[in-house]
Length: 329
Image (cartoon, rainbow, N blue to C red; front, top):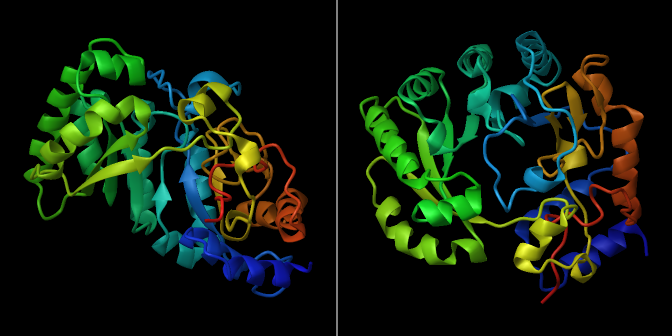
C-alpha cells in the first residue's frame, strides 16, 4: 500500500491520538523527502548532570554517555545560528533548556537563558525540581526572563519521595523551598513566569497524586497543576518499562513529525531527534563541526525521514518509542 493510501486508511479508523493524526497530515505535504525550509529547536540541554536517581527516568539506569555542561560560547553560537537560519521559529516556537539533566546545576544557567531571551526567544521553558531552589538559585531563576517554569514534585512525604526520586529526607525540604519560591514569584506579578506544578501519573504515585492535587491546584502561586502522563521514552530501559508493564510488541508504529519539524541539542553540541533520546542513540550531527542548517539537510536526518515514509521504522531510538503509536480501539 502506498504512503498516502496507508495514511488515509489510518485516519479513517477510530483513532484518538490527535497529535499522531496531525503528524500524518504533515508528512503528506509534498513527498516529505525534502527538508522543510524552517526548523525548530525544541530542547537545548544545559547539562546532563543530575543529583536525583528517579526510578521512572531512563537517565538513571540507561545513560552511558559522558556527563558535562554546555560551553557558554557554544550555547551562544547555537542561539545566534538559530536566529540566522530559522528566525521565525526562533522567535515564536517554545524552546526548553532542559533535556536529561537538572539545568540549575549549570553555573551560568541565568546568563545563558537571559542571552536567549535577549536575542528574541519569546517562549522559553525550564523544568526543575524544587529541592534545587536555594534562595540564591531562586532569585537567579526569577531574573533570567523565562516564560514558563515546570516544577516536578512526586510523592507526599519523605519516604515516598525517596522511593520515587532517590533522595533521602528531601520531600519536606522540597515543599519548603517551593513555598518560598512561589512567595518570591508572587511579588513579581504580573511580570513573573507562568508556573506549572507537575506530578507523574503512574502507579508509584497512586497514593500521592489525588491527595495533593487539591492542595496544589488551588495554591495561588501555581497557575496549573499538571498530572503528567507517564512515558517509557524510547522503550530502551527495561526497569522503566516494567513500571507500567510496557510491551513494545503491542504497539502500532505510525509516524512522527519530529524529523520534519525540530531537533534537540545535547550539552556537548551533538544533535538528536527529540526528547526521547536520552543517550545519544541517533545522532544527526555535531554543532562543533557543522551548522544547524547543514545538519538539518544532512544524510542522518534524511535517512530517518525515509524510514517513516517507507513505513519501516527499524532504528534503535524510534522502533519502540512511547510516542509513536497507540493501539486502535
